[in-house]
Amino acid sequence: MVKDLAVVMFAMAAGFTVSGIVANLYRLLTQQNGNEEPHLLVMVVAGPNVLLHGAAKSLRAHKLSQPLFWLASAVAGYWSFVLGLFLLNLIVALKI
Image (cartoon, rainbow, N blue to C red; front, top):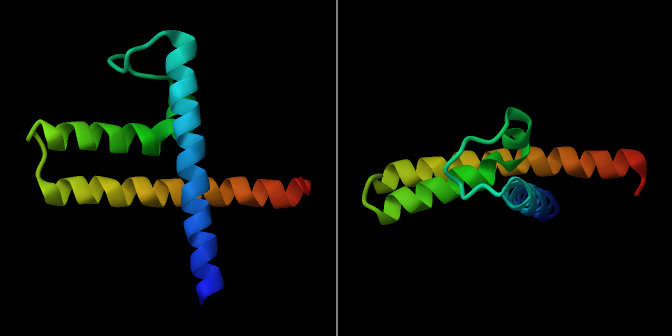
């Protein structure tokens, strides 16, 4: 049970880390300040970071209620988990 929870948390952390790296690299390479829409392929990987950033920004500006912020956080967390699980499966399959 504890081992499974550790794998879930590690997958979420790995997915959110990859998401943040891709989102920030895309912004650096395209010189975007976050106002333009990124490409669909970038959003598949960078989505959790972009979603959580937008939700936190809207919550601070009082444009979003707290339950909707937590819903966006849950979606970003699950998205990070799936992304991290894919990454971990890829690493195991390639035996890196």
